[in-house]
Image (cartoon, rainbow, N blue to C red):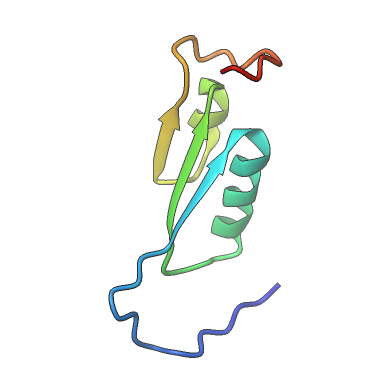
Length: 75
């Protein structure tokens, strides 16, 4: 998928893409690999190992064990 910028001025617009969990992290990685520009990427996950593999410049670990949510939605 290709994106075409119609306007060259940003007028102060800030775009942040936040990927949450494994699927969100994969989506952010895909966008980074495709070269999406002008966006701040952030990934959030309970899995510390997944965060360490992320190419996103901003990572946030959720929870305190780093082992994933273990299928517990309250995490």
